[in-house]
Image 1: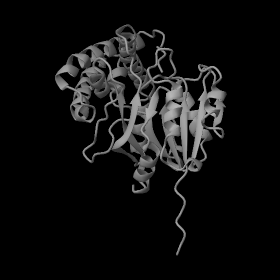
Image 2 (image 1 turned 180 degrees about the vertical axis):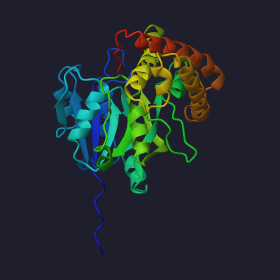
Image 3 (image 1 turned 90 degrees about the vertical axis):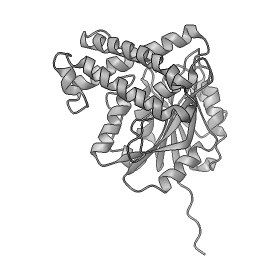
Length: 313
């Protein structure tokens, strides 16, 4: 009998810019979830990028993953850290996770199963992220982390706290404009599509993301994200002429309201598509979406007025 081939190796890239004092899921929770994976530990490489936010990070990581590699990335943004980790990855698959998230026990094994069965034009697999329980958490999950699907059932959006890619494909790309706090993932998906690739959506690939447990933290968290999305939507379109809606933004910003209107339609469709995955109520999510888009609009105006960029993680 021919001996069975060993299972693929997986490099998990963990950024630490998402660490905040108010996190309901800490980096210790994230590491504990990774340690519970049902995939062979010897086939997993953990790469942690140290952005300077976590005291005694090496000891914390080493207590569960003695062979983990820790890369220096002081002050680097979330996407800069992901780029650093991906560049250092040595394994066949790169799986991205954020420090304020906890992966399901079958996360790595599900990634491997999905990519093993996928044809060569599949660059990666996108999972479903859900916020920890809290006030309107299901609706916010559908709005901020919901995945739009294409007509073929592929992911029409990337959420990079729960994304895995083939290393041989990703090494041809990167997270461009990595200093931006968001929208970078949308640009990556566009680049992949232009090169003939697609990303699978897998409902079984589950991740839990921390959610502020008090409105005094939750409200700024929500609206800062909306502001940042608008800001970086404009900045990306100013820099990337091929990006959808760029022409409307580049004519002195006069088309920005039309871009926001189109995004509102896409986001409502996303919430509708995603509601059953996370148990969201569409009617309850509707005013949230309107508040989000209104704030997003103002964030875009801030970019057009060349105000300082927000920092989110």
